[in-house]
Length: 377
Image (cartoon, rainbow, N blue to C red; front, top):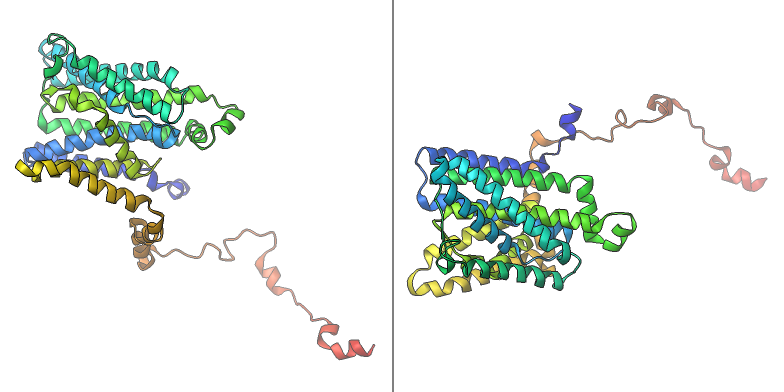
C-alpha cells in the first residue's frame, strides 16, 4: 500500500495516453477501419512527437538553442532509406529491414551529433544556433548535389514504403521508447546535473559537474532520435527529398517545443500533435487558389497560440482556466474523492499523548483573577 501511495501517476500519463492511442487505432487499422488520410496523419504525428521531445532535451532542459534538428533527421532519412532500399531485396523481410535501417540511421545521426557537438557546444546562444543551422544546410546541400546512383540527387532517393497498417504502430512504439529514455534520464541525478547547467552554468561548473560531458550526452541522444524519426519519414514516403529538410522545418520543430513549454515533455507532445494536425488540415482544406493562404493562416494561428501561452496579461486567465483547474474543481465536488483531514490528532506524531495533554488541569493565576488585590499590595 505504501508503494502504491507513493506512486506518481503524473509521471506515466504520457505512456498511458500513447499506449491507448496505439491500441485503439492499431486495432482499427488491423480491421481495415482506418482511412488512408488518418493513417498518414498518425504517422506524421508520431514522427513530430519524436522530433519535438528529442529537441526539448537540448532547448528545454539543457538550455541551448539548436536549429539543426532537421539536418540530423535528413541524415537518418537518407542513410536509413538507402540501407532499406539495398537490404529489402536481399533479406526479403520488411520488419528486419526496418529494424536495421533504424539502427543505422539513428547511430550515424548520433555520430554526426558527436562530431558537430564537440566544437559547437563550446559556443553559446546565437553562435550555437548559427553553427547548427549551417550544419543542417550543409547536409541538405550534400545530399541534393549527390549523384543519381548514390542518393538520387535533386530528384530524391526512392525508398520502400512500409505497410500502412503497421508503420504508425511501430512509430508510436518508438515514441514510447523515446519517452522512456528521455524522461528517465531527466529524472535521474544526471538529469538534475543537466538542468543545473541550464539554470546556472558557472555554479554547475563550480560544483564539479562536467559541463562538456553532459552537453555532449544530451546532444548525442537528441541527434539519435532525430535520425530515427528520419528513418520513419523515409518509410512513410516513397521518395526522400532534401528540400523537405530546410531550416524552416527546424524552426517548425522548435516552435513545437516553445509552444508546449520549455522543459515540458507533455506540452511538447500536445504541441507536436496540434501543429501537425493543423498543418495537415490546412493542406487539405486550402486547395487551388486558396493554397497560397496556407502559410498565412498557419502563421496567424501559431502567433495567437504563442501569445496566449506566454503573454503576461493573460497569466491570470491561464491560471484560472486550464485542465488542472477543471480537474481540481471536479474532484472537489465529488464525494468519492474527498480525503480525510491529514492533520487529525491521531495522525500527528507527538512526544506526549493527547490524552495526557487534555487531562492537565490548568489553574488560573491569582493575580489574573484579582487585579485589584495586586494593586492594593
